[in-house]
Length: 320
Image 1 (cartoon, one colour):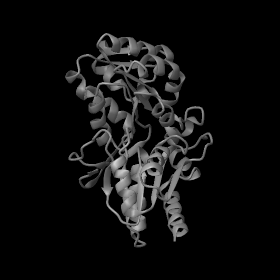
Image 2 (cartoon, rainbow, N blue to C red):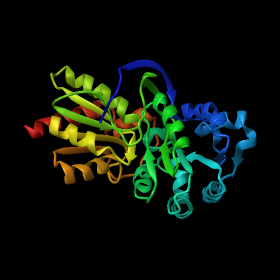
Image 3 (cartoon, rainbow, N blue to C red):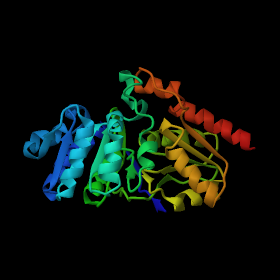
Image 4 (tube, rainbow, N blue to C red):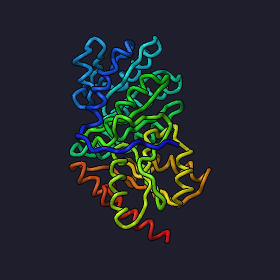
């Protein structure tokens, strides 16, 4: 169980751009790293690496299955492939990821941008609401969803150092940088960003920052909410989940993902075996997305700050 240093308010940035700059920052430390792109480098942040290290940038075109298979081959000869495309396009290469990377446990990093409703106007065909479930179920595959640009820079360093297959989510929209440089990403560890006694709010990716704002609103009603950032979905931190359940007796998980198979499911699997606790899973209710701005969509699908706040109040009243 880990506790975070203080939170700060800093300039906004997108997770995809922060990821792209991190690749450049760490390029010299990992001379065997190569970046594979499916003709979307401008949308994933990989354009930063392409500009600085064109000799280590491989343009695979719109052929995700070939790209992922190629990454497995490159890893088998000692290179460090980082595969970049939109999350939804990585699902096209599920079989290749399963057979060419996951099963042989090859050192390939799959990085998906534009996950969840964060894609916005591109609509349901581009909104990947099942990626956490898909990759979490894959043997040997670790799954990471950092919450802000500070954490994604650190997580990028980690996945390059880590020996084994990883799927990591980034994000399209601008997001507040609320963690300072003293924050330390720890693989497999949840971070308590705010302590509390009455309720625990678990989040990953864009929902962690929203949960912090929800906790502020709840505090005005005299409700003390713990906020936990679960940036590693697999392997998940059982210790912090059980600790929070025992302390607050009520759990809410929030994710920009289908309610089935993602963060909420992973937490529920721990609770049902280790510490049965009343729990509410907030996410997209098993339906496709639709076109709209991310803020509008989060409100429509019930994962905005206001909607999370309202659901938290209702949950507490139900428990009474």
